[in-house]
Image 1 (cartoon, helix red, strand yellow):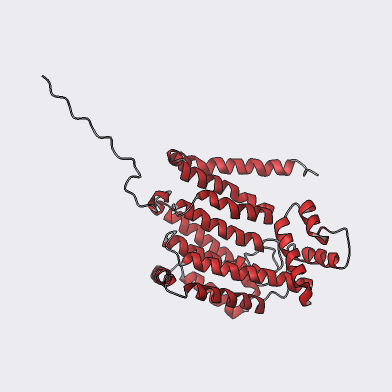
Image 2: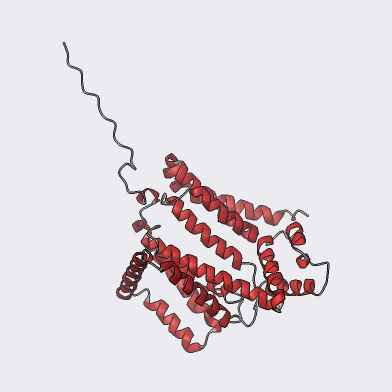
Length: 338
């Protein structure tokens, strides 16, 4: 009687035995190091060059042009040194070590009180160094519209919360927050511009608190947390919290919450669907935030349809780019719906 051949055990799935965090890692970034460095260097060169063009409308790229020349030159030198490998490696290792110490300190009693105190101090600093002008953008129009509403003009959208909800199509959420701040601080004899600036400074304090809280966590990874701190605190967008009146302050805060929730979903520390809440708030705050909807679709497909990952890595960027170009062209060809 012939012996039966032993049944072969099927190989384990590719993700078996991998750490929870690694399962969320899309690609090996080492193959793209050259491209990343090139793009970063080009961005730094653009910022350094535009630092001497204060009269050109570069929208946040030439923010160094409004600083004193010694400060400007010192910051440009610091940017250049960041590309010198020995210094860059030293700064990177020091920053990573600081994040690890922060993560360890978070478990200590009173850590949340410390973070809250830093956030409050940041709010005071934002207001103390508040912007003296609205420069370009929608700030002047927003302020004048609210002031007209306070004077009794019933043709402006800002006349009531109901009118804002019913008639504002671009930034209803941001406008409602401004309206709420003005009405809340009116009994304290605060002017319209002071109320709006205080709101943005308070959002800045919350922004600092959330960034520090996320950076002191052990998820997502330490590199992601480091970039969260760098982009959160050292990009020109931080100027929005210095009492600068614009429609983008509230969306920036909600998008921060969205990014953190998305990374928590990627690293299986929460449902990726929770990221939809801050994203919806950001879109309601300003319609431009619909540009982040594709990232949410990617997040859901990546975490819920594991079999599509290879296809997404190969096809997502060209398909998304083609679709985005088609939408932009269509938007320019057709008049807005009234």
